[in-house]
Length: 248
Length: 314
Image (cartoon, rainbow over all chains, first blue to last red):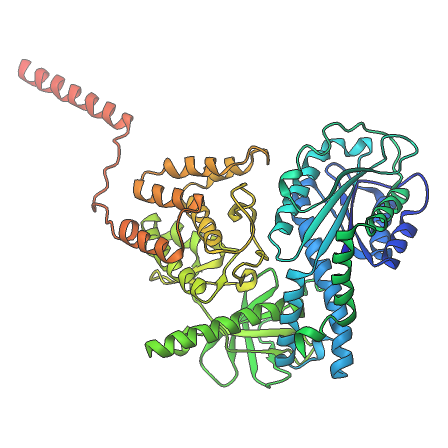
């Protein structure tokens, strides 16, 4: 299962539409969640609408919070998204097998069995989350909190039974030709989340759309990796016959 | 999505089950948990009162019901052996969907009358901690024996009756051992203090229990520690708080729990029972005499001496 978690504090202003980029992500089976971080003042109508739209296009969730709630929010979103994705897939299977509607329509005994499977998969499905951090000038005072929230998320993911990895990008990149810079490649090791943004040079523009495309590229590129293929196969199996092995 | 929370049902609402048809009358709202709202209800035509939890997310609530069902069967097995099953000891009476409205799922459990642990201690005094703490540890031990961890242990989730009986409420955060902890509260979370993983094990609950004790005995101190920068936040600060408590036996128990030093909750409960529950402090407490009182006493002695001198003189 693959997710992108975008952390930003305002509107994009350069390049392709981030809503379109998120729609592309969804097309490739990657869910996009968005957190808007605002400590002083508001994010503005335009900004908050864009945040909601990116998440909608990316099939994910969006929230606008202050830095104190950041860690908790990221954690909740990630978990909810995993549960939701699995629930959707399971619901499809349930309909196929039982000819009945969604989880809510099942009688308690059957519902209990289905939820046991969902819980099991939520805990064990391999999971990859690419964190995409807006590092425009206005985000600077919030980056320490962002880094702490990433560490906290990594800690929670580490506790899962299934393989869980995160990668961290920030945008805009170091040069104008680079949409986003990779700060940390796929890792399941919490201790690697240290001083990610210490050498960061803040730049003005906010190319959110191009940055999302850059992350999609990274996901694609990574598929060549042998290990990646293995994980993919597991994911593929899970998509195809997810419930088969567990329930029947 | 189920993130919405509907306004609570008014008093007198009749909640009828869609599948089993039992009817419950709402007496009042008891509280809101992470997964739903809990009401005090009376089963129509009967005297007993129950707690009924209406979920705002079918999946999350069912997951909670599954945990309670497993606990129920685990407890039944052990109590069958002990031959002392009482209807009051059950975690879960039934689960169903509210027939009217939007098919909201609910489950019915036994009603624990009392107040949250922190309110109880504020009212009855911290001297109750030895007894109530033991009872909480025994509950945890039973839960662990059944293969579950509680996860979100905090004073708000411990109900204490007027006579010191303690009961854990809100099993929404409980998960099978070895799984990741689903729900937690910052201060009570081992990960928050850089003191270990978020994988559910017996030490996780014991850690939360130790923080719970610190919160009850020195909330200000705990707050100060929690407000530090995340990088510097450390379990050592908690240990320092624990060591500064006047009760040295409690201090060392807490330090051990914070370090994850107990092999399991059974040992932790046994040590608590022997050293913290078992020790009775002398009935009369010596309170330091305030300085103003000493001074006033000196002054009155002086006045007395002067008066005697004055009386004798004339």
